[in-house]
Figure 1 (cartoon, one colour):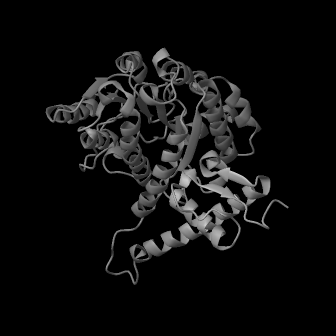
Figure 2: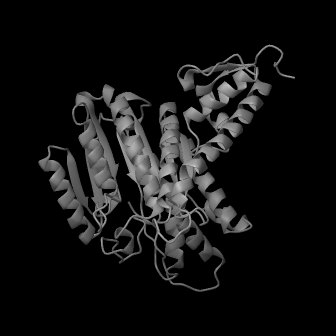
Figure 3: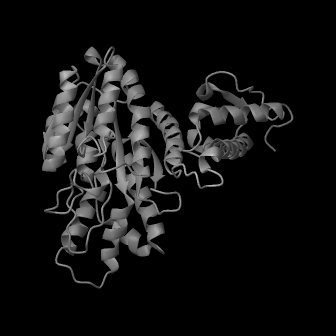
Length: 411
């Protein structure tokens, strides 16, 4: 449940994502109250983990699904708001009647671990399978993967900085013999925080004239996280940090995808709409269902993220943004439907018939992570009423076969 902190030029970012010698714990300002960015990722977890466990646990022995959070934090904020561990344990309780969500929470900080341990003890008393492990993520990775043998695995990697090494992600989590399947008991999925702030800070060392004793070690840590030095050339060849972050993020995602044979979906995460990207939340999944589910979860989470940015009610205000929130959401949805409709029309120019399930990326281009299946259905129905397709939009959205109506064949 980490959030990126500022790191001075003299600090070394290790692969736990933390500055050497620094302990991120419940005394950190981040853990006092939840920021809007945390609302987004926590809502995605709430929307995603239960369907994942329900679906893949169907094929697992005893319905057991393993959840790993390698950078768990204290579990709750100081104001009592649930952090990601508390939210996941709530999910485990929801599915307990038909699935065993076996949860492993790893936390390095001593203070945070004490709080996390208390949360886990409370969950164990309720009969939930929960484990608190203290130390670096890498220290416990092999042990947790061994315990996960034969069961589906969902790993949430949300460090303060760089996180696990590229090899740990691709070879250990995705590469062990029991993690090679695509569905059922062998399913493996990873939701990962790729930290844009860390890319900006560490990339800046490449052009900095300041001679820092920790500079080589920090750059080397970035090499290990990215799977090579390729990112350095990309950063130096970019026109600015905005372009550099985008290109390095895309390069990292593509390298992981290729290494593990998975699909990927990513969304930008900001604390406020006008802020620069703090990090990218990336799902790696070997199954098409995972990518569709992530799109749905991200869309619903974005609504809650926008809601979290509303100012508190104020009697002195002539009007409240809360009063117009629903109308603004309706307007956004209308724009998404128009965009999806144009995307479908473009696809119909390339092929006379296709199934929605086979073309998520093309259909959702420009709105992926914002719109969801209900908006696809609305777009298809508009095209049907306009005489552009024979598909009336009735039925499961992903199974809809869209074909060009008579007279609307490719020109």
